[in-house]
Structures are given as structure tokens and as C-alpha cells.
Length: 66
Image (cartoon, rainbow, N blue to C red; front, side, top):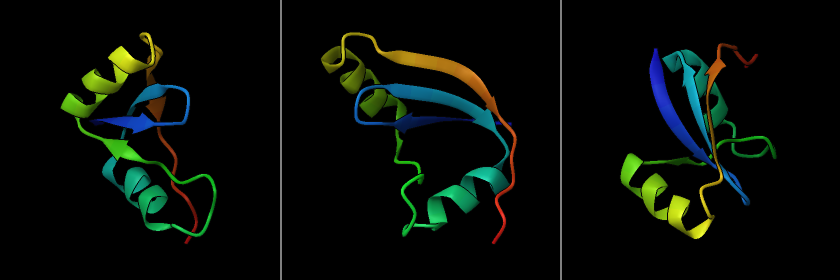
């Protein structure tokens, strides 16, 4: 299980999932539902800007079709 930080326009979401699920989501750049992954340090900086709009950890256990 891997913990990843995903940035959306209004908040940051902490996801716990498997490597294959994240790989499929990050690779598909032409769709609108791709994730923008950020580091832990970037998440802390964005957290201050967004007034603590951090949600999670949320389990993310899915495998997208390729």
C-alpha cells in the first residue's frame, strides 16, 4: 500500500492504494480525470494556501482498463 498526495484545484486528497492503480491514472493524460501528484513537502505548502483543505486518507483500490 502506498500513500500518495493528489492536488485538485480546490483541495488536496490523500489516497492509500496500490502502485498499479496510480500508474494507470497518471499515464492517461488525455482524460480529464487524471491525478496531479504532489510531494509531501508541496502538500504542506499548498495546505497553508488552501486553509487546511486536506481530505483523507481515502482507500483507492481500483485498476483502470488500458
